[in-house]
Length: 137
Image (cartoon, rainbow, N blue to C red):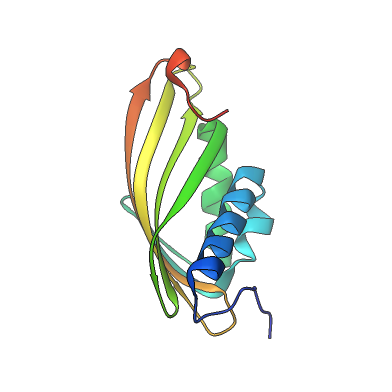
């Protein structure tokens, strides 16, 4: 059985470690690598989309970075308990018309005993910004 350390139950240090690993992976923009952190039957809600399974995660992420160019993400611990972590995040990207955006949101994560994320529920809002207002580079 595949495992993704650190494993639950989480303490503050291991929750922060898990979050940093996720941030680093998403900033790599490598869908296949990112998908390995999720269970085979992972369940997502991302904005208004419902995504189920690793293959669907890979397909979603490939599409995401076709449209969200120069993507840069920062995640922070909000809360944790046993096998769950809540995260506050922001990221910046530009679209194909060179309009920059900053996206703000929250994610609720639930992990299986092997440290793979079974559930990811994300609420996200996008704010158009000027390139000069970027904070994440």
